[in-house]
Image (cartoon, rainbow, N blue to C red; front, side, top):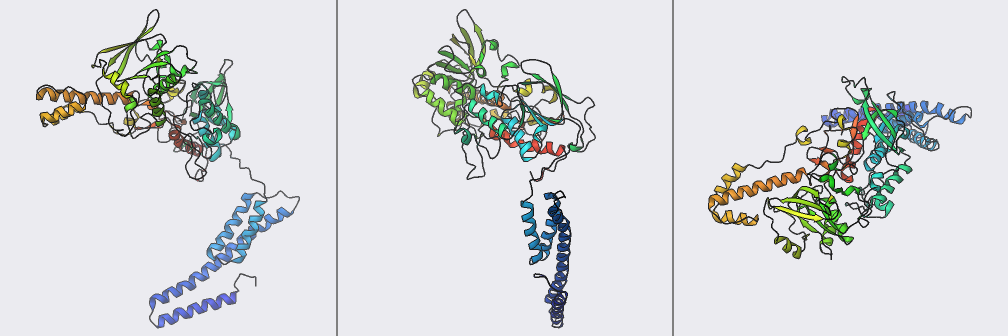
Length: 613
């Protein structure tokens, strides 16, 4: 008898003893215990037999594999071939944990498998195209989703092609003004928490660690992305322009039940960025990741008469090198505040004209208020010897140019009181606030500014999706309505008027005073003034959402829950233009959350198992 096993005679003795116990309990009418004793006999017999069967099968599988290892003329078995024997020994132990022969079999297997060379798993494509995926853009979103596809989901790097029109990975970041910094802070926390750097595009990486910078410059961040691409051997084709993206002429099979059943794809025409002969590539999937920074809103249509006379902030390479020392900045959100703080730091005068006093806005969503880093810098600028003037609510109506200067005309909007942020330090200094209070800010009145330099347009970006070659492959509309989200409540003037009629005159005047409105007049006059003020406030908030606070969510195409075009199956979107309902993913730490969803859908479409990823 081998050590660790039980002979047939011993098994019979154990079973007989169990049967005698059950019979004795039954005679004593202890029925519950008698049933349990009988179950013990049945289970013991069954489990021991099953354990022995699993052990024998495991040894039968392992035997010929071990002979192949010992035979120099035979090819060594792969790790996969040992897997069934491993499962059998584990099963034997599951039935009888004391089975020492099964334990010994697992030890032998562990030693053998550890000495085998790493097995290269090669998947056969379920389609006939030369590429599995083409990713348009090698910036933060392109590199991030490329790493997700080739790393976590195991796609072959040579079958995932990133196309970048710039000369290097992260080219857009290299076009930032040299003074511009990331507004979200980088911190390497992954060594002691499960979280990771806010500006990281892949788990296990950190710009803070790689660059040793909390708020990286554009050049620094591009270096971080380039290091990721090189280290992970991503397949990147630089200096290449995408001319067109076309679904195959035979169309998509609308009867296919899953992506993996779909046998269509895309023809992508490319050529060198500096000109030359175009070529065509074919791919099963396309991911649009071309970014926003190089596609200003002003490229879509004039924002106001004379907007073409302005200089967009994305064209500035350095604020300190910018000719002139007196500027008008149009727009008061992140781009405008960045321009104002940097101009002030460089000793240049500037006046910011904004339809919304974004520097006073307080919201729970960090995407719709100034970042703390931006607020800190603009506070420092306003407290400096060269403070910018911040004017709002002013909407620019036109820009004209005479012989020697630019004339910026704007109209004052209704006064708006922004709620929240009571404990925040005011951005404007007391002296500046007092100076602004002396200005004529009557609603509808015109305000004129003159500057020798082209006004700086900081009005955001339309994005590459809206202006790129893939535009017609997406549907466009209001994501909140299309995806079943309710719109924000609409101001009801009649209900507000009815509520105001129930207020006392003193209450009406107190509320009007709090809103910065005149308090003289009869009760009907006060009611209409209060309703009008609330209407203006609601209109201003709607406008705020539609323009400056809307930020990178503006012009978002319609996507399904997998971030796939609702009109072109197989075309995915990643990056700051992704929007679902009222949720926008405009920062790295937001849009990187969608990489796994896109990569999972693509991997499944290629016939891969994704549960482990």
